[in-house]
Image 1 (cartoon, helix red, strand yellow):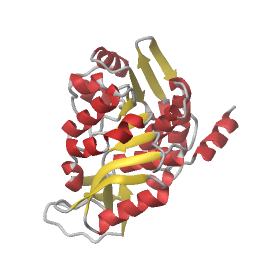
Image 2 (tube, rainbow, N blue to C red):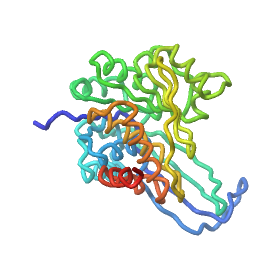
Image 3 (spheres, rainbow, N blue to C red):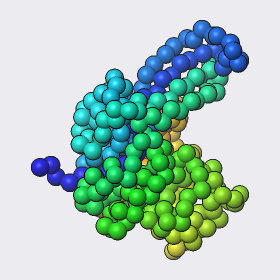
Image 4 (cartoon, rainbow, N blue to C red):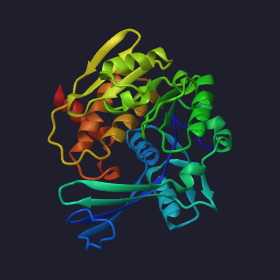
Amino acid sequence: MTAPASVVVVGSCNIDLVARVPRLPLPGETLTGTAFGTYLGGKGLNQAVAARRMGASVAMVARVGADDFGRRVTQALHDEGIDAAQVTIDEQQPTGTAVILVEESGENNIVVIPGANGALTTADIDRAAEQIRAAHVLLLQLEIPLETTLHAARLAHAAETTVILTPAPAQQLPATLLAATDVLVPNEVEVTQVLGTQARPSEAAQALLAQGCRAVVVTLGAQGALLVTAEGEQAIAPFAVTPVDTVGAGDAFVGALAAGLAAGQELTTALRYASAAGAIATTRPGAMASLPSHDEIEQFLRAQD
C-alpha cells in the first residue's frame, strides 16, 4: 500500500494540438501552417506535475479516453511519479483536447473539447474519498463539471484538508463552493468574473471573503500578487525576470503554493515560494516544460537574498 499523497488534484487532463500559421484563417479559408505539435495540458494535469516537481507526493483524480491521447496522459503521470490509480479510462468519451491556432503575432484561437473531463462525476470523487481525506491539500480548477468540483471541495473541507481553487475558466461560484474553499487563487480579471460585478481586485476579493472563503490570492503577473484575508491585505512582491513565455506560470504558482502548504509552510512563506516558481516558469517556453523543480526554486530564492 502506498503512502497517502500530500496533494490530491481533481481536475482536467488534455492534449493540446497546436498549429502555427502566418495569420488566423478567414471563414472557409484553407491556410498552410508553419509548424504543428501535440502537448500535454489541462490545468489539472499541469498543477499536478507542478506540485510533484516541487516536492509534494501527488495523486490525480481525473478521466481520460480509451485512446492514444489517454495513454499518453497516464504515461506522463507515471513518468512524473504521480499516483494515477484514480484516473479512470472512459470508454465512451475521448481524452480532453484543445485545438489551438497561433499566428506569428502571438494571437490565437482555441477550441476546447472537454471529452472525458466533462464526464468526471461525484461517483469518481467518492471512489477517491479516502485519499482526499488523508491529503494535506486538495487542488481544484473549473475545467470539470461544477457539481463534481463542489462535491470534492465539501468532502475535503469536512476532513480539514486545505482546499485551493483556481477559478478558471472563470464563472460566478455558488456560496457553498466558496464556503468550502480555503484559498481562492484568481487572476485580476477572474476575481471580478467570479464575483459577477466590476470592482477593483482588492474590493472583489473582500466581497468573496464575505461569501465564505478563508483567503483570496489575486495573481497580478509582473506586479506579484495580493493576499486578502480577514486580517487585511498583504502585497506579495514579484521577482524581476525577463519573461519568454507566460503560459504555465499560473499553474506553476498554484502547484508551488500547494506543495509549500503541504510541507507545512505558513501561507505567506508558501506564497513567496509560489511567486518564485511562477517567475521561473515565465523564463522558459511551453507550459509543462517550463515547470521548475524544488531545487531550482530554492536556488533562485537564495540568489534573491
